[in-house]
Length: 103
Image (cartoon, rainbow, N blue to C red):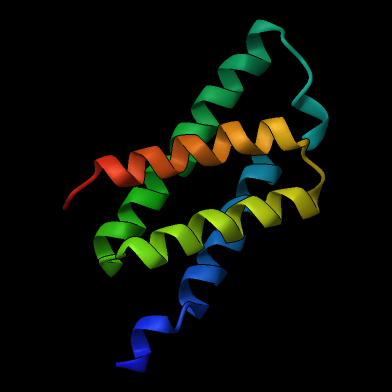
């Protein structure tokens, strides 16, 4: 029963997801609006969302763990150096896709 509150695996995954995003789309790029960077953001963010959905499907995340994934991801991005508005946009995109995925 207490296993449902063990979120170490979710925390580790969320941190690695944020670090992977930062490696592929550094904080220095977030303010740029040229076509190449916006295209890069789309590709990288969709890849991150896809990984999160696969993790959800493989680990059967409930509401609590989905929220934990989103919060840990958000705080890791903040620690890396992204701005609050950017973090909100990226995290919301991930959480919405997780909520829409019912498998």
